[in-house]
Length: 254
Image (cartoon, rainbow, N blue to C red; front, side, top):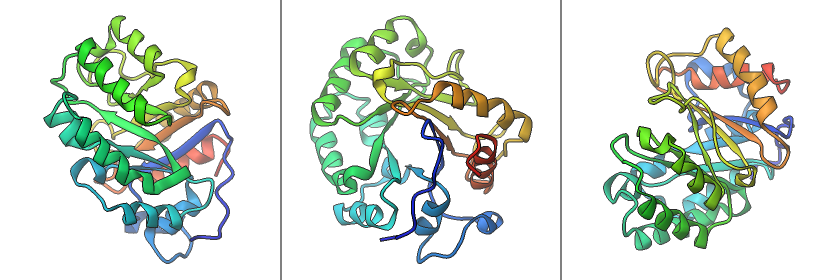
């Protein structure tokens, strides 16, 4: 386990990336360490695990990751596509149970879950309430939902966020009107931004004018009990870590 202290952020804002593989262009941002994750966790205090969307990991893998990072570090974990995209939230009791049992290896370093929905998934309150009710029976940690169909941005969805203490992700680029802003009650215990890269998703970097506009939003919306998480997902071009480090500077953490 790393003995390095966790970074000391303004407690209301946490900044990180979707994954911890350090590209050559960002290597100068990090010190020495036995692994990419150990080096990453000295600079940033959160990470989003996307690989869980594509494949399962053994419980011992989750435990090893948890043992690698400082005490204050937190992981956000993306739900598997078998649950969100293939089963489309329906009759997923067994799948969800198996997934949560694996992720339990993170222990107290589990920061929350990301539920990204397919663009074709229309809001069906009966299905959504059954699914998030099932999740809430099993977990108490924060849950962020990234819907990508316009129906999830209607007034009806407000009852869903409120009823299950969910936060709706603020996404860039926004696929539908309203997706650029977070939503949900304070009881959700976090606000969640995902920056995928714009104009070219996953490849484009974020220039200073965009980050300078974002920084005060994070500081305004985040609190000690419901922090603002900002995750850079523009990893394909290798820009995520540089952008995250720059945003750290702008919110007073660099």
